[in-house]
Structures are given as C-alpha cells and as structure tokens.
Image (tube, rainbow, N blue to C red; front, side):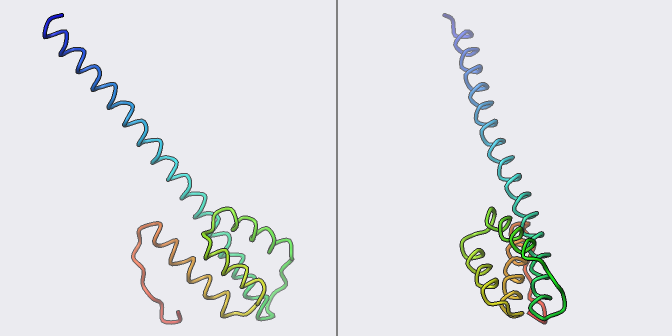
Length: 124
C-alpha cells in the first residue's frame, strides 16, 4: 500500500468515528430535551392543581379527589425526591403555607431548568 492509500484509510476512519461520536451526543441531547419537555409540562400541570388545592384549603373551591390523585400520579413520574416529599406533606396537611412553599419551590426549579434567573417576589 502506498502512502496515499494509508491517508485515505485514516481519513475514512476519522470521519466514521466522528460521525458515531456526533450521533451519540446528538441522541443524548435529544433525550435530555424530551425529558425536560415532559418534566416542565408535568410541573406546570401540578402547579395548576396545587392552586386548586390551595383554594380548597382556604374553603374557596370544591376539588375532587380524582383530580388530586391525577396530579399526584403525574407529579410522581417527574418529581425529584424532595419535591415529592413536600407534595405528600401538602396533601397530608392542607394548609395554604405548605402549598405555597411547594409552588415557590417548583417555580424556582422550572426557572432553573429553563436557565432563567431566579428573583424573589415580594410575597415570597
């Protein structure tokens, strides 16, 4: 084999290897984006349900147990351990303060996952 054949073979190996590495990183990136989409959707739905639950704790609305169960199920799929523990605490102790703490925590986490700066609200 001549030197040009070795150069051609080497460049083919480099290009093929780069293609596989690029495919691997693209796949990881797409999976991470999909996970983020599902988590953000679940957390947004959970916040809406928590607002209904907060109104129930204040006596302002009537919410079904089915809706609470559905929110809990969706939340269990995508929540972190501390978020899930706080959610269970909120359900056990239906107080406005517990629910508000969880809403603020989820709001901060959503902003962090979207790489948005966190700022403290005056009522937080």
